[in-house]
Length: 325
Image (cartoon, rainbow, N blue to C red; front, side):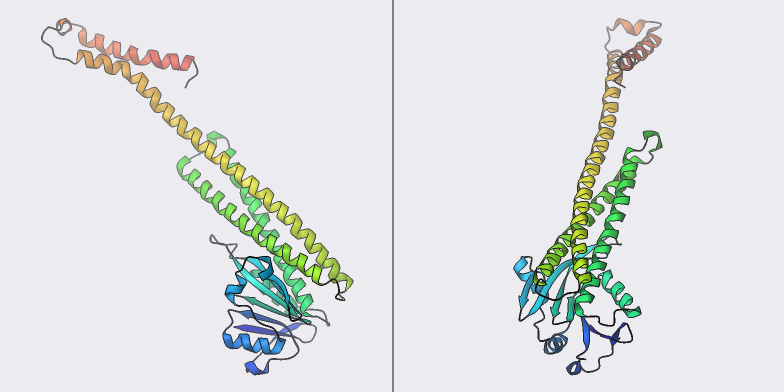
């Protein structure tokens, strides 16, 4: 599937394409989504470029992601998908600038693409080019990463409050701790994916800035590119800060769990020590040897009960006195 966008009445409209062999020459942006071989060949004929395969887009080395071929600039970045769900993921997206036309190749639905499409469909510059569309896409991607990091930061603050809240307010410890640990794991995974995306975007922006040195870009676009570089750098630092904070929160959570476990073990240990002397007394006087003199005592039974109670109370009192409980 693919979409062809052409300039029309101060906006960027999606053109209706009936014949792959007759793509409009005025196309500013061609968006390929899970393209077929026929669509790939049609776009290659129009733009004079080679469309990378999905396997090529998955390559991680820089030389395979950022390069120039036959005058076209190929830039592959890792973008976020489904960040609002419990199963966020990343996807590779390739941006190709050939002349003043932009071709994007993707196999997923990153949210910034729909936002930019709707924005340009409402209004755009009368002299819009593929470079301008690319700038809009990069701005939307960076804004999306910032929104995700803001949400992660707020969620981590809430988790931190749940961990360090007063002990009297805690209820359902086991279930609550399980929920907190799952939340920490999900936020850590999401933050790492956002940071991966930001690193790839930062490399793309740096590459774009370098290859455009000899190109006559407008002053506004050059300033926009510098702003994107600063934004990506600051967001990457913020993602690293959130990763460290999540690690701290995880360590704190595990520490609280260990304290709870230690308290439970301590309770069982104290109960065992407290009940050991009464058990010993009951065991002695529970023996049924024939020549035991205590069997003839008139007050032997109440004496044994008092001795067992005293043997239990004295250790408990000693533990309380030493503040072990």
